[in-house]
Amino acid sequence: MSDANLYAGREQTLVKHFILQQYLERFAIIVGTHKDTLTYVDCFSGPWNVQSEEFKDSSFSIALEQLRKARRVHQDKTGRTLRLRCFFLESNRSAFNKLKQFTDKITDVEIEPQNKKLEHAIPLILEFVRKGGSRSFPFIFIDPTGWTGFEMNAIAPLLKFDPGEVLINFMTGHIRRFIDYPEEVNQQSFVRFFGSENFREKIKGLAQQEREDVAVEEYIRNVKSTGNFPYVCSAIVLHPEIDRTAFHLIYATRSLAGVEVFKDAEKRAMAVMEKARAHAKQRKREEKTRQAELYSGEILHDPNYYNSLRVRYLVKSKQAVLDLLEMHNEVPYDQACALTLSFSLSWESDLKEWIRSWVEEGVLTITGLKARQHVPQRGQGIVLVWKTSREKRPAEL
Ligand SMILES: C[S@@+](CC[C@H](N)C(=O)[O-])C[C@H]1O[C@@H](n2cnc3c(N)ncnc32)[C@H](O)[C@@H]1O
Picture (cartoon, rainbow, N blue to C red):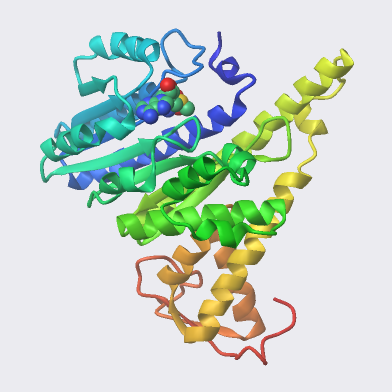
């Protein structure tokens, strides 16, 4: 089976794996420049619905490949050998046996596979991460099948690792379906999952997309405060065959450079996602009509749903940046950038475009640019100076 066919019928997993691979590729190289050890923890390892006999379409195999790549890069560049450590957790016995067969053959990476539920494995994970020592950087991946098994209280010690980063699959589709079930048991399990009761009041009476946004925002707020993360952002992953969110990947970090790498992975992944959705939707149509279409799925694909989401979040993020500028008048570029990137589908290139048009309109000036520099960059102490109040703001944003 070719690598392209590994994800037929589960293209959302292709997008998840693409983001994981793209992110880890750069993460491992960057972190490897100032740390000796990379510690990777997959709390829900699988294998899960894999098609490849060599587990190429599993998160643990993808992660190992990227960590090894970083080790090679550093070896070639500096002669230094990065120490790689992985903790792979899987609760299902038969999936675990496959995982173990795979890891037993690996001799070049320290691996601890464990057949336990996450709820019962937190002390083991804490011990494993601590054993990495002070020159280690932990990355924690939480990729469940629903919303149970990783309650905020339970994962709090993992979120608190500093240094450390976390990537969480927020199972939006499942959560959307069950969040309104009135049974007390169900409601209590959501309270434990979110780590607060606030979500109930906040989502009441909202239309579907807004409810989804508010639920994700609430979860992000709690991840942020529990782990004391300055930056948490999310990537939307859509269903392959219908115009609806499958899940959000929520990424928490203490480094703006990490945000940049994640958002870059998100941006690339969206192109991959739309291409995969185009083919998946065509497959569905052809199954229904039992007729092959004349043109390729990509030509026939209607990008309206994706485009409407992008516009939705751009409007929100632009408004948030404007509010920040109006409130403070002088805002470090890095801060405006972090705010822009905290919204899904909103990228630094968008912020630069808004800044360009505000400068042209004469409502914004930029201080700290070097001679002949027109475009601000992060990490240069550049400040955006807003020159107009809310009343004077041009009607056209
Ligand atoms: C979505 S799959 C993981 C997929 C994998 N991360 C990947 O991308 O290839 C979730 C896995 O977690 C396992 N699992 C479910 N509940 C768990 C729990 N409480 N603790 C640990 N593993 C669990 C399931 O058996 C399943 O293999």
